[in-house]
Image (cartoon, rainbow, N blue to C red):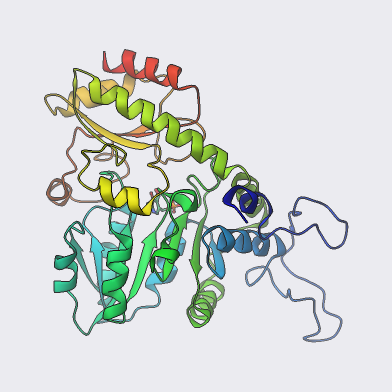
Amino acid sequence: MKFGTKAIHAGVEPDPSTGAIMTPIYQTSTYVQKSPGDHKGYEYSRTHNPTRTALQNALAALENGKHGLCFASGMAAIDTILKLLKSGDEVISTNDLYGGSYRIFTKIYQDYGIKFHFVNMNDLGSVEALINDKTRLIWVETPTNPLLNIIDIAGCAAIAKKHNILLVADNTFATPYLQTPLDLGADIVIHSLTKYMAGHSDVVMGAIIVNDDELKDRLAFIQNACGATPGPQDCFLVLRGLKTLHIRMERHCQNGRKVAEYLKKHPKVEKVLWPGFEDHKNHHIAKAQMNDFGGMISFVLKGDRMEDAIKTLERFQYFALAESLGGVESLCGHPATMTHASIPGVERMKGGLSDSLIRLSVGIEDAEDLIADLEQAIG
Ligand code: PLP
């Protein structure tokens, strides 16, 4: 089945009781049993809910995985993976990742005795050099947030396999429309469904997708034991969003290219970060592992002054100044003070995230209007 057909049909069956073509919102906390233990597969909605089951199956199908698990947020999905670890374990992560991931690593799990290494994953040798008998996870995010670096997933998977370590890939920026990390050898895919997957900026949710049955059982145990599960109404919204993922992503990519090319020629713009440019340092990896280059773009104005970036952000009309990304509407943001403020300035600068960097989530409006907005905002 091709991707677009899967996005519409995978995981979803007409409702068995009525034939409803859209999975109903099973707004129930519990399910009646005929006799103790004699039920229809559903006992309590923290553990299972039919609307959630349909979404979990759809997500697994889209990521070419076997099992999907949904959570109340992307961070709850990340938290669940970290709960596989115990004190003394080590994790190797990219030094350029979502601020919330950095925060949960360093402000929560470090205190439980887990050690995190942050490295530039453009150099896979430096990843392998950090591996020891305590290393349990390699954590990649690609494209990275907000510097749009591309990490070689298959290269990381080869290292992880060699040392019997799990590879986790945060696929939030790419979505399975652009890349399927499990096919490239990752063991665990995580998503902030809040972004492109739901696509309409109206829900916060997360997911994990895996192939391995035993790993799924461990993660499902944590999902149920700790209880950060989403409600059925939110699951319904994500299911509905997924049905247009392929056409939304196609347009995000087309608009992304137009905006990136416009910015690159702009006399007031110093540099544009977008993996579709042939001179992007990881373009060859992006070409090999992605189907297109996405609608996330970061740029820096000439002079690299924070006050110029702030003024530009204030002038935007269609690009709304807001946290988050991946919705149908275009957003702009200032990572240093918004999404990545939880990373100390020195660490941010080490990874190349300057205080004047502007991040765009290019939506699916008409590109001409978006470019006119950039024109008036940059001046
Ligand atoms: N991963 C990435 C790459 C993100 O950008 C985000 C949020 O921005 C998350 C994870 C966390 O997801 P959520 O906000 O749904 O908890």
